[in-house]
Image (cartoon, rainbow, N blue to C red; front, side, top):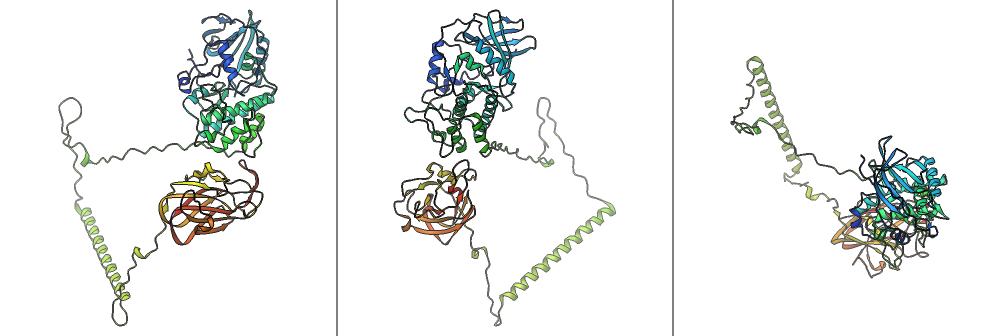
Length: 577
């Protein structure tokens, strides 16, 4: 018999107020038996992830069935996972095909029975493998029941979030697959309206599947005047949750804590450190309801198709590199390190193991010939070495004497060669904005994290390439080297090329200098149209704090992060001295 799995269609799950740690113990269950009042209260406390409930309906008794009951002489009910609001959900067995299935049951006179049957039949016609498939929808003996797939190898997103936020690659795969699936469903006129963390499943192969398409909303009596917008915002909420392990509204929901009251909707990369910036902005673009606004200058996504397009414009996020496991240390096994003279392991009398002696030296004419050949080679090698040594001594004596016979010795040792600059490790950094208008203060650390995929970027300006006097005197970052060091060179990788970027390095007195740039000591300056700037000081300058100051930047086209304009981004900074 198939074991209990998270893959059942639990359309009656509620947001709940339990903390995440409490939810983790129940991550492998498919639902909970709860009262109508509890479910309705939780439904009202969850903001913006579905449509609206229809007008209050009279309470209808859930059909009293028990384990072992058979439907259509085929589906044997095994375990009730939900009993709520006049319907119940079961794990069952299809005895004809010998497989586990899920079943939703409700009375035929239930006010939502007709809409549930219609939703189930419409969902079954879609036939998209990215959705948990509806296998049967029947009205029989005063009962209406919907039979659907049961995936024993799938885990719901609620259980995954109980363990922590997902890696950037997993979050990227989730939003890609879910948005594409919902876009396909909406093209066929089908909406979900109940797209919660428990409605998204991840299989053992890493594929994401959605359960309860159309049926979940029909069972709960949920509708919406803007179904595409509702489902798109729900996907944004899912992405927000997997990036931060928080629900993007003030109320706790689905085992996740909500946002602090009164702060509004803040971007995921401001909730948790290390969040992928592109995914963070994508989540904000999808969360367009209830006062949420799109991040920066990008337009909001109000339909799944627009969300699919926005995901496609992002650089692909690759999976993390697998951890390298060092091979075991090599064990030499020569006969000198063998078991000679050691007692044998295990019971029984000890037996000394003898080692076979090496073969005797070659005898006869062949052996003598080899001996003479080896001797001749040794003599020749000694003669050649002596000749080379004498020749070297003779040349040194000639080069060291002058016309008067005085000997001059010149030492060309390594001490006279100029030493290569040594790398200087950056300990800390802060953005320098003397006008009180920083560019991207939270991303400063991305300029020295040894990764070219992350970067600090400026805003897009309408005037340029020189910022002064129409825009500002400049933009920059102050780096802390830990202690005073001699700075002689700097290597700076930039994101945008073109005419032109001007960079100057200054020695300053702190991470937050109060003195103007004009009073700081200049280390080096450079103007470039490339994406790399190598600065070199005429003489090394000793300082603990170094200001990287940009006063010009090229005009660059629009990308997924910012609009077209005069802008620049720094991906990596290295100092040496």
